[in-house]
Length: 254
View 1: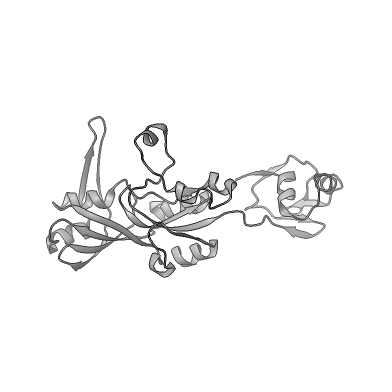
View 2 (view 1 turned 45 degrees about the horizontal axis):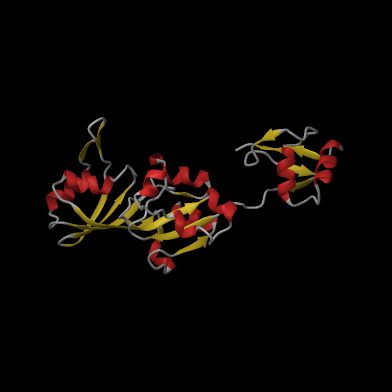
């Protein structure tokens, strides 16, 4: 994301006023990647360029926010439109309203989506970059769910899910056909399994079980990557603020 030079310097916390920022630029005290820049409107990506003031490297403070929510049932992972509001739907963002700064609240997005009745691990953040890294199928980040199914899961169904099943979806106007990626599945009980998938297609877990002739009674996400919801002691509907480092080490193992 690009930013203008004067905006970067103002946010760096190094200067007391806008006039100090302008003077530093016009006097030739600011360099980017070793080249002096005197244009206050110069645009650049601060993640890819090094900004210096009289040899001192300047950086933006970490302005991104990260939250882990134990999502309750009955809320959707998007901001309500007029139709949804008229139907009495509730949004996960209402949980954060008046509990975080307004400028943070306005920028919040969910890292992927859980459907209305799925519960558990949900990252909510202002950092669009981390959203892309986690949700991009090429990242290979596993999402693990505890699944309660309608009828006893047998080894034939389990093998099909592990190998990938053919899914066909049609809403009357559009249709979608695909084979789910290989998954990790462990049978915990007659009708209880844990399932890890690396995709995040709409209602995919429910559709995987429907494809093998079973159905989902309850769905609870317990982790993403190596980051476990149980480590945070959150009750249903509770959230806590976490750091970028926790996400990086927990999800990506960095």
